[in-house]
Length: 556
Ligand SMILES: *[C@@H]1O[C@H](CO)[C@@H](O)[C@H](O)[C@H]1NC(C)=O
Ligand SMILES: *[C@@H]1O[C@H](CO)[C@@H](O)[C@H](O)[C@H]1NC(C)=O
Ligand SMILES: *[C@@H]1O[C@H](CO)[C@@H](O)[C@H](O)[C@H]1NC(C)=O
Ligand SMILES: *[C@@H]1O[C@H](CO)[C@@H](O)[C@H](O)[C@H]1NC(C)=O
Ligand SMILES: *[C@@H]1O[C@H](CO)[C@@H](O)[C@H](O)[C@H]1NC(C)=O
Ligand SMILES: *[C@@H]1O[C@H](CO)[C@@H](O)[C@H](O)[C@H]1NC(C)=O
Image 1 (tube, rainbow, N blue to C red):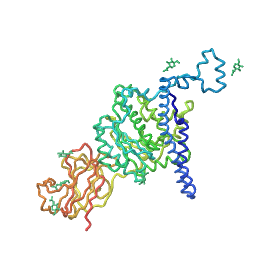
Image 2 (cartoon, helix red, strand yellow):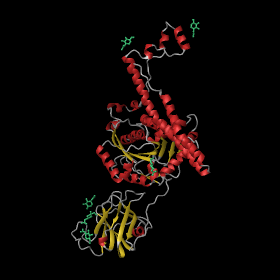
Image 3 (cartoon, rainbow, N blue to C red):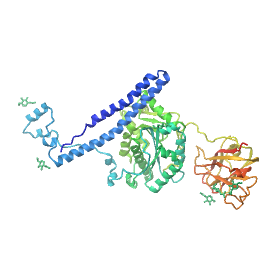
Image 4 (cartoon, rainbow, N blue to C red):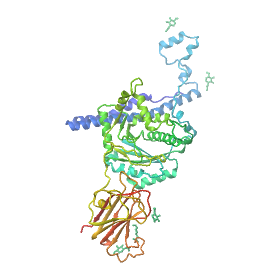
């Protein structure tokens, strides 16, 4: 059996590129001839850069298909030559040689050396399995254990957000909320956020996915957010890793797993969009960060400045952008050395290996590296977590380049007398917070602590909005705390024994959710309100910040 493949992989690839140009070229000409002024020229240059990078990305996606084809061809070749003896090379290994070579071979007849042309021996390169042999123990080791996805692909920006179970505070939900709030609709349309739950406890994975969908139903539905998790057999036995760099077993385990996590996440994301940005689950982003990153990358491309990493945060591996087409460099490198070095060192080593001249001094090397690893200032991302996912490791690193974010949200509130049973810290009093001058910062709340706003004269309250915690101290929220109002006259049909009425005559109208926000309306039936208060029911491990207070009076 002779296998006839439709076209050689190379020819196919060329066809593909030509097709790409055929699709894009008319568009380019259209833009060229319709926009003569300088500003639009810049837009055009950016647009061209975008197309250029997109083509690179599509090419890399195509290369994966091409690889499959190559494997298939080899496989069929093996089958055909083993089943029948009709394969061209096995019948007559010299069939397709050039005439002069044929003549040479003929002149050597009688010698063993004449039989060495076109041997049926194929070279085999080591694959990832060589570095991660445990993957071979289970045929499904590379299969996802969990996937929540609408199949979005072909976007400009893919953001990889790995998350693990943390013993103390978990910021994932705050981080996601912040990332989404920082996008406008068209940015959200051209972006994909992949949350990688790097845990093999499926119960936990489901819990995270469920919470994400409940919190962001629209964005899960639109395909902006995906959730994935690896199978149990993706990881080697993490208790049997080599101890390297003289680190503790716990640390070696943590950093080795992080390497494998990044390799997994990057591999999944590679085919989804043009650029890839590595994030973490305890960060804050400045608004419009998506467009800032994209424009910076396109600007470099348009100016034909080569780059490998665009760095939007000075810390660790946060906010590092790569071209998706170049992710295989990182993935393979992480797989080779996952047990040897932390992930941020590996990135540095990779760059070093790529461009530094061993014989020249270190300053030159630094300069060379800085050309491919470009820092963007000010930073677009900030670290908020103080508890790193490595148990006990306090993560106090903050990026000094990060611009100021609002720590409180001022509003003008109805005139009121303000009291707090929680002791305030320094100048962060409740009174000043109520006036919109700063936030309130109180020491460890205890059960039955109360923050009370008593109006100078009773008013009709329409809405209330309280936000606890802030960017610097996201864990300093109000937990298990209700919002209560004291009506001037209790409606007749509500009795003291009602479930929502406290013994001292306040009516519960809301409570802080686990993001630390309490927001709601006060039913008209309560009429005029004498006071609003926050009522704490449990003690807290954290201090409490009130970063937004807004009580809106019914305008009548
Ligand atoms: C292929 O050819 C060899 C020698 O020419 C012969 O020994 C062998 O049986 C053949 N195999 C098949 C499957 O026909
Ligand atoms: C092959 O051998 C013949 C006779 O020995 C010689 O004339 C001819 O040049 C040789 N051909 C090559 C390609 O070496
Ligand atoms: C989102 O993308 C789709 C398809 O690319 C497009 O039809 C739609 O208009 C976009 N929406 C926004 C808000 O940009
Ligand atoms: C009490 O009466 C008001 C009208 O005065 C009505 O809107 C409200 O639903 C009633 N509430 C209860 C708990 O019956
Ligand atoms: C108590 O409050 C809850 C939620 O605020 C509400 O669903 C419920 O109807 C209230 N019950 C009464 C008796 O007002
Ligand atoms: C809130 O506090 C009350 C009273 O101490 C307690 O019964 C309840 O379990 C607490 N709820 C949560 C979610 O901690």
